[in-house]
Structure formats: structure tokens, C-alpha cells
Amino acid sequence: MKLRHLILLALLAVSATPALAQRPRSESRFFRTCDSVGPLTKLEEFNARWETVIVRGSTHIMTTLRADNGLADVNAIELRDESNGTHATGVVIELRAANRQEPSRQDESTIFIDYEEIDPLIAAWDRVAHTDDTTTKLNIFESHYRSRGDMEISVFRQAPGSAVAAAVSGGICNRVKLYLSLDELTKLRWMVVQAKAKLDELK
Image 1 (cartoon, helix red, strand yellow):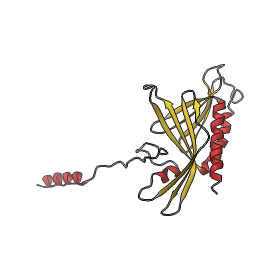
Image 2: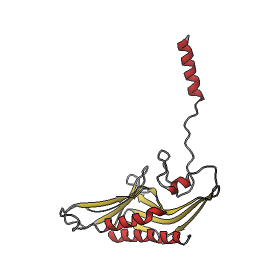
Image 3: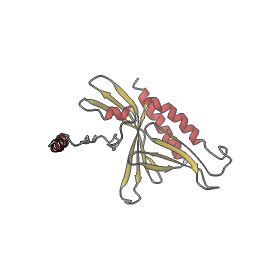
Image 4: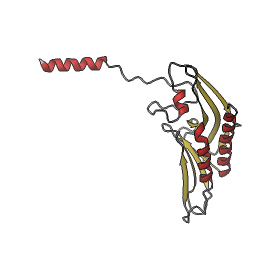
């Protein structure tokens, strides 16, 4: 009898426990589409808030950067919670690359960079960008930096005598990687700096 009661209670507990519902994804294009990973930055945390009015402002920086295998866009962004007056600012980088399995489709990834992280990112960016033959005595090399929001910048030489190349990637759930020339890497850096200048105008 006791066993029957225990089984009955267990069944009632299972039926009474609601299924773990996934929150609907934000319709904003400035949102990382991965429900299983929590916010990595303040911008993501603000953007995912419920039951409050979030005011979003953004400015697109220059034109789209075109790389060999995709595109990159940079936006300055401000998010403000109207319920308590708190706000967050930063940079959003959107990467789009051709899908290898389906060339007609593009893979997309959104990277968030909080305002206070921009200067350290630029400093690390410059160190990575200056990787060359003088960095190591070995003829194959790579240096990289990964931001809190999972943006990775790398400069590398893959074979002896080959040109030094660069890449930028991001996205925990759907990682996108763009291959860049050093000039394109410099232009993307400049776009991030311009986005910070736009945010400084808000102060």
C-alpha cells in the first residue's frame, strides 16, 4: 500500500510540474539567438528583461564591411530601462557569412561589447594586429584575443612564406567566422572606435 501511495504521489508531482518553457526570443535583430546560454554582457542582460519598458537607440556606423566570405556591421547602441532609469551602452557587431552546406543561406552572429570594455578591447586589438615575423622565431604563428561577449580577433600565418591574415569570429550558439585582410581588420577597428565616439556624445 505504501509503495502504491509513493508511486501515485510521484505521478501527481510530475503532472503538476510545468514543462520548462523557453522564453520567446526577442524580435530585435540585436539579440543573440541562444536560449541555453545566459547573458554575457550588460547589453544582453538589459535586452532580455521582462515586464518592463526598454528603450533602444542605435546608430549604424558607416557602411557594411565586406570580407571574402561575408559581411560585418557595427552599431552603437543604448538601452534604457524605463522602470528604474538604469541604462547600458556599447557596441553591437553583426557578422554574416556564407553557409558552406547551403551557399544561398547566410549564418549570422551578434556580438555585444559593453561600453567599459571598448578601450581594453581596442588595446588588445592593436597588440594582436601587430603580430608578424618579429613576434616569434617560428615561421607559423597566431595571436588572438577573446572579449567577454565572445568576440575573437586573431592574426596568423598558416604556412611558411604565406601572407599574414586575420579573422574575427563570434557566437557561442552559432559561431560565425570572417576572414579579413589586415587592412579590413584595421577598418573594422576604426568602425568600433567611431561607435564609441557616438556613445561619448550621449554624456
